[in-house]
Length: 89
Image 1 (cartoon, rainbow, N blue to C red):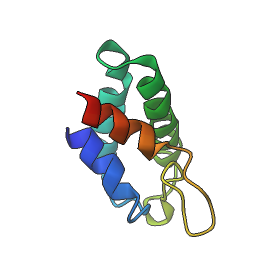
Image 2: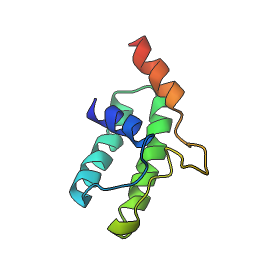
Image 3: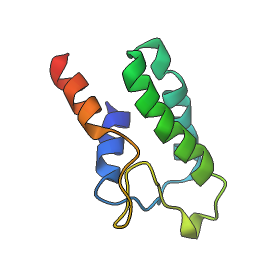
Image 4: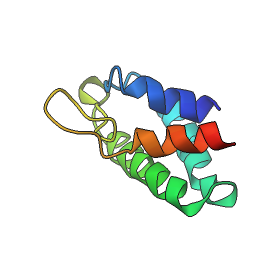
């Protein structure tokens, strides 16, 4: 649930202020989603995982997530799929 809440919160602010330790915890959680989620949700979480792996390599003062979209880009993460999955369980 912590992961889902964090993903949704990034829609409001894609700036990354997380420590590398927290980013690594999220990465480890995302790597386990294929054990508990259907494939169509895992594909969406993989977009977040790829973005986290990119962000962790950047300088902390310039980190920003792309999966959630920005003022100039659409999100790559499909929030509707996640919300539909949550409402169905």
